[in-house]
Length: 637
Image (cartoon, rainbow, N blue to C red; front, side, top):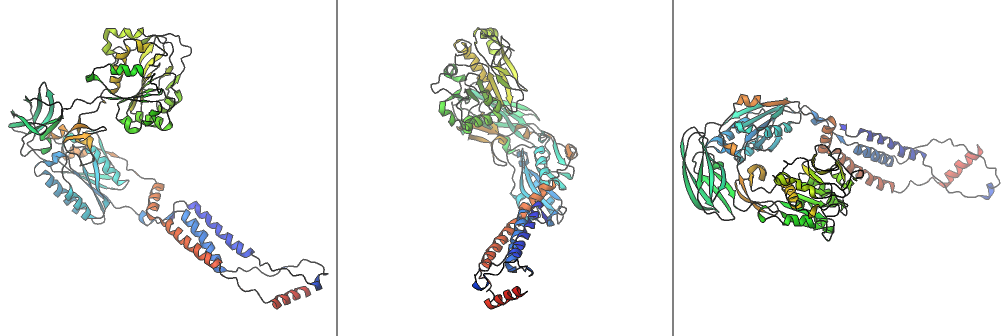
C-alpha cells in the first residue's frame, strides 16, 4: 500500500495525546475540615504511588480515531494494479463514404472481427472508427464480446478520410503502454492530408480492403445565368454515359445526358426558372458506385448579410450617429445586418449575440460591466473582429487587458505630436483603400485636432498614418481574432471626418474588409456540421438565427487514387511514447480506489462507540474507612 500524501501520516503522532491525558488524569477528592487536626502544621506530602492508565478501551478508541484520521488524509491506495500493463490492440475501422462501395464494408467488418479474434488471451482490445475525424467506440478492455458487437454496429457514413486524425487518437489510448494499431481501410491517397504519428512503442498494421471501383460523382453545382450548371466526374477506368437530374425544392425540373471518358469531368446545364428561395439538387444515376457523392445541393436563398453589432456608451446615440448613417447609406444588396445597443443595454451583449455578428463596433469602453468586457475579450480571441475608434471614452487599460497576448501594444495620449493633422493611407493597394482608386487622396481633406498614440504590438499592421507621424489605422491580431484600431473618434468631436464625403466609403470598406471571408456560409461539408457519424448530405437549418445551408460531401473522397500499405506505414512518424508522471498515475489509482472514504466511515463508527463508552458510569469509589486508614498510616509515617 502507498499513500498519495504520506506527510499526513505524521499526524499519527497525535495518538500520543490521549495516552498522556489518561496518565495525567487525577481524581479530585472533596476537602473536609476536621476540628481535631486544624492546628496541625501543614507539610508537603510525597506521592510515591505509580500512575496507572484507567479506561483502556476508551483510550484505545481515541487513539484509533486519530490514527484513522491521519490514514484518511494520507490518501492510501494499493499498488497491486501497478504491474506492467498488458499490451493493447486498437482496431480502427474506416467509415468514410468511400467504404460504401459494393462489398467493401462487409470485407472491412470481417477483417476487423478477425483481428479481434486473433488478439491473445490476456491482452486488451479497443475499437475505433474514423472518417475525417476519429472516435473511440469501445475503450481498451478484455471484453471481446463488446468489441465484436461494436464492429457489427458500424456502418459507412458521409465523411471524408483523415488518417492523421485516427493515428493521433489511437496513440492517445496507449498513454505510454505498448501494443499495436490495426487500420482497416481502402487506402485512399486523399486521406493523407497532414502528417500522422504514433508512439515508437506502438506497431502499425494496415489491412487493405479496397480495390478498383467505377464511380460517378457530382463535383460542383452553381447558378449560371437563369439556369444551373453542374460538373459530373467519371472516376472509373471505362467510358460511361450518365444522366443527371435537376430537383428544385424536391420537384423534378429537368434532365441532361453526357458521356464521360475515364478520369474526365464534364459540365451539364439545365435551363430552368429558379425561385427566389428554397434549394436545388443535382443527381446522377450511378449503379454500383458510391451513393454519397451522387447528389449535390445548393441553397437558392439570397446570401445572408454580414452582421455588425454597434455598442454605444451614449444612451442618446450621439457617438454612433454618423457610423449608423454611413452603414445605412449602402444599397440593400451590399448591406449589413446591423444591431445597436446603447448605454446600459450593452449588458445584453452576451456570447450568443456576439457570435451572430461578424464585426463588433465598440464606441467607448466606459460603463461596460465586467461580464460584458470578458465576453468581448472571448469573442475577440475566438476569432471575432472588433472595430474600436479611440475616442475620449476609451480606457487604455481595458484594451490592454484584451490584447495581453499582443506584446507591445499600448495606447497613450498624443502629447508631443503636431495638431491639426491629416489622414494618409500607407498602402493604397490595401483592400480598404483600393476601391478609392485615384480619389484616395481625398481622405486627406479631413482635419484631425486630436488623436491617441498607438504603439503597435507583435504582428500588427499600420494601414494609415496621420501626417504628424502617428499611426491612424492599425490592424492588430489577437489570438484568432482581429482588432482594428482607429486612433481618433467617429463622432465629429476630435475631427471633421464624419462630415467628409470619404467617410461613408471608408466605413463600408473597413467593415467589408473585417467581414471578408467570414460572412455566414451557405454551403458546409459534412465534417463541419455534426458529431462523428451523425451528418448526412442535404439542406438543413443552421446557425442563430437559423438559415438554410447546403451540406455536401468532401469531393476529393470520390477520387480512386490509392496508396500502397508499405507506403502508408512509411508515412507515419515515430514519436517518443507518452509516459505519464508517477504522481499523475498515483492520483489516478487513488482516485479509482477511494480507500480514504472507508477510513472516514470507520472513523465515524469509532467516534460513535467512543461517545457511548465515555458516557458510561464511573467506577465506584473506595470505602471511606479504607481511605481514612490509608490517610492515618501516611500521617504516622
